[in-house]
Structure formats: C-alpha cells, structure tokens
Image 1 (spheres, rainbow, N blue to C red):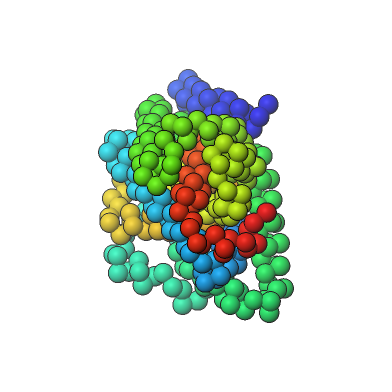
Image 2: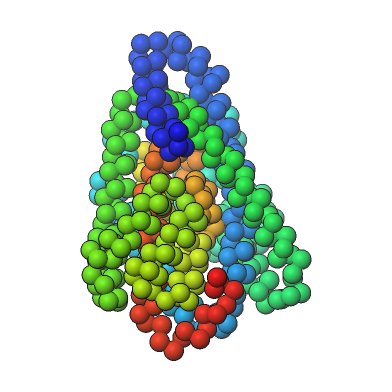
Length: 427
C-alpha cells in the first residue's frame, strides 16, 4: 500500500477515533491522548523542528553554489530566475487572498489546552497558541533581516536571519571558487544527510497523522471537521485559480501554445507528480513531455527543469500563504501588511530550501511559521500536518506544471542567450 493511501486512511481513522472517544468515552480518550496520541504527535513535530535549520542552511547554500554567478549564467539565467520569482510570489499572494476571503479558521473556538507541545518552553522562537503575539512593524522586520550573531540566529531558530546568512554564505563560496572546494563538499554531504533524515521521518507520517488528527478532533470537537474541509477547499480553489489564470495567461501571452493543448501534453508528468509527490522523481517524465511533446529544446529543458525542481515551487508557496492565514485565524491572530509581505518573502526563499522529495514542504512550512511567529505546536499545525501528505500530491503537480510553463517561455524567448546555457546544469 502506498504511503499516500496509508496517510489518508490514518487521517480518517484519526477523525473517527478522536471524535468517538472524546464523546462516548472521554476518560479512555484522556488516557490514550496523554500517553499515546499526544506524545507521538509531539515527537513528530519535534523531529521536523530538529532538522529545519541545518536543512535550510545546506539547501540554500547548495542551490546558490550550483547556480553560480549571475554573470556566468547570463541573460538566460536571469530570465529563468525572474520567472520563478514572479510566479512564486503570485502563487503565495493567491493563497493568502483566497484564505482571507473564505476564512477556513474563522469562528472556531480552540481550548487553551489544545497545544500539542504543552510542555514546550514558551520562550522558544514562535509564539505558542496561548501567548499574545506582538506584531512587529515593517521597519522592525527589515532591520531584523541581518543577524548580528549568526550562531545566535541558528540557536534561536530565527528563520529570516538564518536564510539571510545562508544567502551571504552561498555567494561567498561562489566568489571563492576552488578555494572553498572542501567546504562545498561538506555542504553537499550535509544536504544529502538532511534529505535522508526527511525521508526517514516521512515514513512515519501515517502514524503521526493519525495521532495529530485524533488529538485535534478530541480536543476541539466537531467544529474542526468543517474547518478541515474549508482548508482543503481553499487549497483547491487557490491551485485552480493559479493554474487557470496565472499559467493560462502566461502560456497564451508568452508561448506558441494554447493552454488546453499545453495542459494535455503535460498530463503524464502531472499524473506522475500526483502519484509520487516528488518533483525529483517526476523530472525524467517532465523532461520527456517538454522535449518530445512540447518540442522544447534539450538545452533549455536541461537547464530550466532541474533548476525549477530546486527553487520553483508554486504549489508549495500557495499552501504557505493559506496555512499561515488559517493558523492565524484559528488562534485569533491579526496579521498586518508586514506579516503578509514576510510570508511572501519567506515562502520565496523557502522554495530554495525545500527538498524536492515527498514531505519536503513540511520543512518549508515550518520556516514560514517560525519567521512570522505563528504557533508551530497548536491544533492548526496538527490539522495541516495531518492533511499534508494528501495535499502534497496536488501541490507537487502544480510545481511540476509551473516548471514546464517557465521552460516553454524561456525556450521561445531565448534568442541570443542560448550560448550561455552550457553550464553544469546541462545533463
């Protein structure tokens, strides 16, 4: 049985177990939640938090060193990265807007005891569900970007500062070139190690999903069922809008294809992405669809698709916006303009730091929450993590489709810049 199927069954069983036990046998539910459900969920969340910082650092640095200097990449690299940045920011904005309009977390009463990590030190970075969140101003957010002490930023989990230091570190390695060969090798090995740990943690996600959902349902009751459905609806609506509006407009305006024809040719890649939840595993199929069906040049597809697999994750970015608004609504937190801009900015950088493997988006989601001070130990995150494996299939499909759209645009407009693509990206 596939992991996605196991996770879906676990979610349904978690809903039934949490609701039935809390309603008909509250004493038994209390015992099970104290000694089984809550500890399993707590261990899973702590495991995610444990690997976030080293994974983000190694992935961001590795991505920058792989891209190389902007001058070396030339015009093609600039166009490609610009497309990735624009589509990712649009996706996150659509997610935020859709969640604000539909309001999946509104009018839900969360008990004060609903925090999953009830014994977690509240001085940890990121507010708990019972803390009063002091929203920083835009000026404070900008001034807080650069860390005065990077080691302190790593220790406290200040994601914005960690990302900033990682970017500077990566560009420093690029400028050093062969002199930093040993450090580059270490960063590569660290990234491989962190990705392997993510894969190991993802193997237990059905058990974590059951426990997290059972705890949430038993604690907050039937109201959360409607909230879960609304959350899924918001994700679905946001993805549909992004594909039918953003991608269709880009295809119509900047390529030689009609949107329906383009989507039809990409069906094998979309199906593979949906089944595997992995952009990396789908890459050969995506490359085949682009080169054989869409007639995109081999050089462009070999450059844009691997790069997009690493840093262009529109579906994940959209889900970041939805999840942040959802959790803020559940906890009665009013986000301001500075927080929304931070979510978009961190989601963009998180696209670089998220591994292109199943469950990689959980890591990037943690980055966004930590950056804006949203609780990472409450009922909201339990719902999101519980449903993540199911949602991740749709998100990955949009990620892969976005890579193909950008590749098609670059291929049509490459012009004289084609002489700069014979870099290490070309397979």
